[in-house]
Amino acid sequence: MLYDLKAKIEINQQLAASVYYLELSMASIPAKLKPGHFVHIRLMHTNDPLLRRPLSVNRIVERKIKNKIVKNIGIVYKIVGKGTHLLKEMAVGEEVDVLGPLGNGFNSNVLKPQQPIIMVSGGMGIAPLVFLAQKLIAAKSKKQITVFLGMDTKKNLILEEDFKKLGCAIQISTDDGSKGFKGYVSDCLEKYLSKTYTLNPKPYIYACGPKPMLKALGIVANKFDIPGQVSLDEMMGCGIGACLGCVVKTHDPKQEKDFVYKRICKDGPVFDINEIIWEE
Ligand SMILES: Cc1cc2nc3c(=O)[nH]c(=O)nc-3n(C[C@H](O)[C@H](O)[C@H](O)COP(=O)(O)OP(=O)(O)OC[C@H]3O[C@@H](n4cnc5c(N)ncnc54)[C@H](O)[C@@H]3O)c2cc1C
Ligand code: FES
Image 1 (cartoon, rainbow, N blue to C red):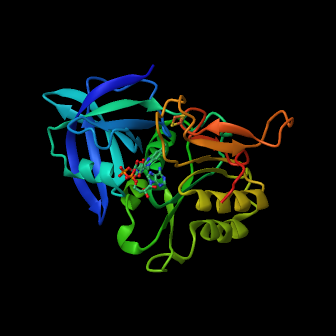
Image 2 (tube, rainbow, N blue to C red; image 1 turned 135 degrees about the vertical axis):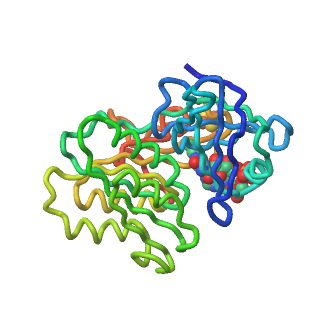
């Protein structure tokens, strides 16, 4: 079921130079909310921007208020334009309109018992992976998770501690080499896999980040024949599959056409790592 709810800002605090953590409380959190889902946020005090802005659910937070446990939604967002700039200006106690949960979310039913998990994030792609790690670790079977965090430079690295607290192993890469591996996170993963290629069972990859990073990651995953899912980031209009403003070319499962279009907001944002036809 789709919720369109007013949500109160509980926290809106800076994490890095242009990155903020937003925590929202609302009447209830949709029970089916899962990692990889996103919410579409509308600023109610202005019509500019008119369109909602899609942001991934970063975590579910339990808070004790007057001896009652309430669940809030945590979001991590980067300021890139008008909508996110206005969101940053909003104060605790103010309200936004939240439509969600949207998208398909990550599928964890495909994991085999004892299968090692690799998470790969580029930039703000890190946001939904914290929620995924939380859920996988809370599940009964023991999970071994290695998280590859790719960022441009050390001072912009965020959420490393959250993964550490969950017991995940961390591999860091920065484009400028200021921390960890120097270069792209896909190259960092390739180096790691070259050393651990004999892993049995093979790991499963969950990734989120900009398209060029996911494309490079797809090549690495193919080289080592590793399965996985990628979550795509795209500019969106309606967010509910109606405007066709967010389509991506995918391989035709029936192999009758050269490609079929899928809507990132409705059929995604999570796709099989081999499903996308990368064009850039
Ligand atoms: C499913 C999904 C989940 C997302 N989750 C997060 C998240 O958790 N945290 C986060 O910080 N961001 C996330 N984003 C991206 C976020 O939606 C955009 O950064 C935001 O909508 C920008 O709004 P704005 O009004 O600030 O910028 P605008 O004024 O709309 O745009 C400013 C600039 O950013 C570019 N831009 C805008 N949106 C995107 C986009 N989606 N991809 C690439 N370039 C874009 C524009 O072309 C323009 O150059 C997500 C996007 C999608 C589709
Ligand atoms: S944003 Fe309208 S169909 Fe995806």
